[in-house]
Each structure stands twice: as structure tokens, then as C-alpha cells.
Image (cartoon, rainbow, N blue to C red):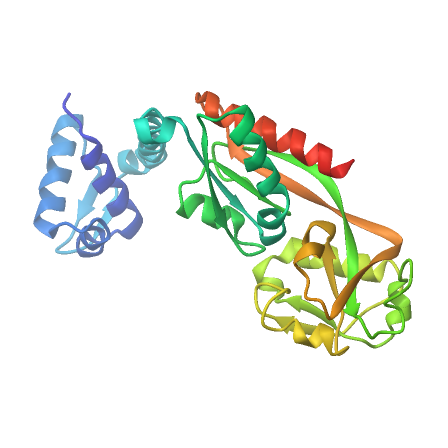
Length: 299
């Protein structure tokens, strides 16, 4: 039986669209090609997979039964090619890491510094991603590792918590509480919280608000662009808002603001996702370097 992956791909596209023209457009092929390849597949299987009209189609019982098998077959083929690609020369000693801003500024430089000394044959390529966009960038950039907060690992990726990182309140250097040893958020009164929109990273957004709510504050939100320490940070310096940032972000804060610990302290998890069952030693070494460096930073 001669069945090709292209035929299975066409079958699955048509099973999804139930329209020859749309299925062909989806695969960027001619409609006649889609029809011919589907006929060859049906001949090879000895089955009718669709009941056809002039342009549309509906699945037969046999076609319905084979949709999930077709999807699994194409997923398996993708895994095969992805795994083979890892052994190409340019990938064997290169590890691509996507990280959120505070990680790019603190943890990753420490990892790369250690890698230059301990694993000099491995090249680490860092890719910055806004909060909430780490997983999407891992997939778009075909990266090996992602570091950020509240990450949902894609298929074939493992996940782990690197550390619980302390979060601090950022206020204007002229704020009456700027010189305090700690800040009870309730003492910030009606000062708005500068924060990106919830759609950007819902779980992270909710966790930051929970830090406030647990300490008796329900702040009004001033919506910021993706990065708090960016074009809207002047609102912090002018005392028109406060923000919450991880301790690793403190070195990159502008001089007109200060970061003060919360009372009681608050922390949120920093997580890592990485390719599961990846055969490359370079990846395993980098994952371990990230783990141990994060542990040292926590101490």
C-alpha cells in the first residue's frame, strides 16, 4: 500500500474544511491536485473517505474513523523531523533561550558567563520576550528553553519552577514611603498600580493583584505597554502610580524611582520550560547551568 504523508495531509485538510477549494487554499496547492491525491489515497486504502458534491464533501463513516489517526500520523512525522533537525551541525552545540525582561537582565547573563567557562563548546542564543509571550516565542523561534512566569508548556516540553522570586513595590524616590524598610501596600492608599493589560498574561496579572489584595489593597489599574520599565515609567517617577517588579528587575529601574520590599513579603514563581527527551548534551548542560545559577541567585 503506497500512502504518502502529503495525501494524509490533504485528507486531514479536507476533513477540517469539508470544501475542496478551501482545503487546497489551506495547503497552497491547486484544487485539482487535492482531488487527484485524495482519489489516490482512497484507491490505496480501498475505501471511500468522502461523499462528494460539486465543490463540497462530507466524511463517510470510514473517513470519520480515520481523522484522529491521520492527525496522530502527521504529529508523529513532525516529531520525527524535529528530532532529526536537532542533529544538524548548526543545532548540536547551539541552545536557544527565550526569556522575559528581568531574566534577560539578571539570570541569563550569569548563566552565559558560567557557560563560557564551564561549557565553552556550547553557544547560547538569548531571545527577549515580553511578559506573557515566552511560550509563543519559544514556538515561533523554535527555541529550546523558555524562562518566565506562569508558563504553559507546549507539547514535548517539560516544565519546572526555578525559584520563588521576591516582588517589591516601586514608587517615586520622592514618595513619603520611599525610604522605608518595607511597604504595606495598604499604605499606598488610592495610588494606581501601573500594570500591562490582563490579556497579555492573565495568570501573572491575577497573581500580582492577589499580592495587593492579600495585603488589603484593591488598586485602580493604569494600563501600561508590555514592559513596565519602559515608556510609561515616568508615571512612577512623578508619583502618579506604583508598580510591582521582581527583585531581578531592580537594577534596570530608572534613578527617579526606588524599589521597597512588601510587608509582609511576597514572591511569585520563576519557571523554565525545555525540550523533553532532547538527546543533545549541550541542552542538558544548559538546563543544569540555569538550575544551579537560579539557586545561587536565590541564596
